Image (spheres, helix red, strand yellow):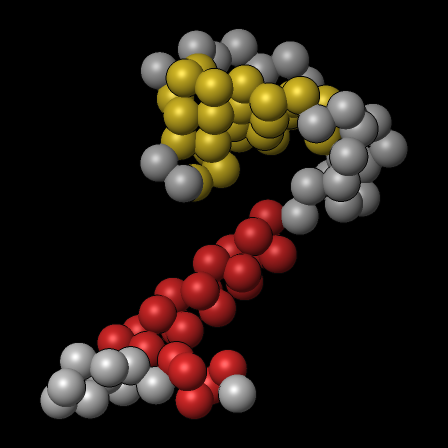
Length: 85
């Protein structure tokens, strides 16, 4: 059983909708009528799916988290307040 199947997605350079199978955070198949058992299925109703955007957003979140962890002073107060001002 895989983690997720995204149904009826619009992907770059394809005129028809397609299905996307994802397991452990990795796209394992892109095609029509994918036949896997999945913990969750999501019908995106012909909406555009862009994996590069998702990966970029994830990388930014990781970078910000690491930055904040590295900038905690000895009193345990982070510089988040300074960054937000």
